[in-house]
Length: 92
Image (tube, rainbow, N blue to C red):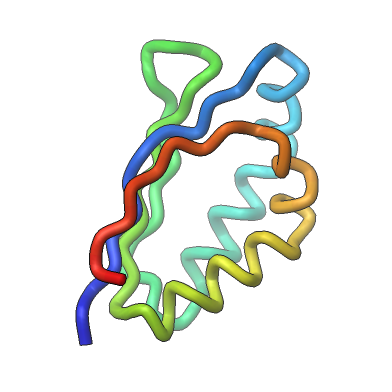
């Protein structure tokens, strides 16, 4: 089994996107950190008020893929679907 790492940026276009992130991020963090196989999950502000740094670590692809599916179908996933993600994934 190979650990899976996702790293990159979550980039809002405007203040409306930022408000959507602010409204839903805490719940998304709690749900993700509680998932089986989640080693760490961080979304931290950067110096740019429209951008967050995202760093995820899952124990393997069998844990990472269900996370991606759950997140995409969640309130978070639907609310932030139009917000740009600039991610790289290692370990898949």
